[in-house]
Image (cartoon, rainbow, N blue to C red; front, side):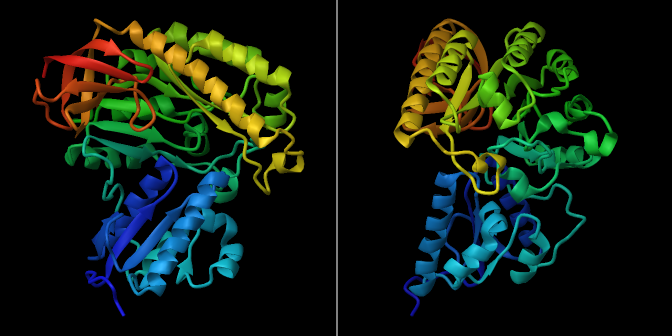
Length: 435
């Protein structure tokens, strides 16, 4: 017996994991809408599609718990059908079918047409860039490539996403134009590896040329680069960043570690010396660039000496933004053949210590911003504050600028110039100069 009265045949898409999954869910929803389906994102619906993440243990657990939660709802008569798609499903489909057989159907990352068919919809090839965005109206993710050709020992992404495949420049521009027409002002370019963009299609690294095309899209004010790989980074991108004001002076470049021994085992194709020089070159080319990186601690064989090398380097490099994760031992990766020999509590201690160091660096860098004026975009209103970001900050992961809403009226999605009055580790407080 149905315990809730749900609108019949409303499809609820639930997204777990990274921004690339957000993008995939938006494409799925756009296709469903084009077939006349009633589709919502993480709201009530009697048909549920769970877009899963299978990257590391925590993400896998969250995905499995979400599937089990909706299977219980199905048993209780609260939903009629549950479909599972995405990375976990791609990687572990036979296991999932065995362990959770009541799911109506499982689909991998490349099986969108099959999923649509199961939902009574047709896959429409002509829908370039048609998406139902789920992010705030002022920004959207723009995926410029799928998959990855890098051989990193710890990473399961190639198992789930396949080989690197760039989207043609023309198609990316069409999608950007459609987003701009909906009021999107900031494009966040995402891929497993931006650095590799174009090699498969144009036989050269073509990110700079793509950026030259995107800056011409009317209505787009900011373009942000996420997930570049350090080896083979196309330095002409920095020339475009300097020349074009629309391209944020921001780069997300996951470096993972700095000990030569660990980098070699990780199969990163670089060294401490090369990485340090690359960062110096970045700062020389774009002096006020904010560099975001992510690091892994507790990788197999990471000694106290390796960790101290990393710690010392983090203190010296003074990254504007940094995240640190504990190593996750993933089956079918190259590193899975190594012994996962760093105890969990040591991994966690090391991650916490790196984040404490970063917190202090962030506080010091933020203090230097007091009294300065910045252009910010207003993402939302929260309590008595409008919450905005500078060009040096990406949504959800970086610093936020808080502006007193009792003294100012600002529109979400609009830009304003503000002066920083106070600063904490990861928050800046500001007053409006001009709107």
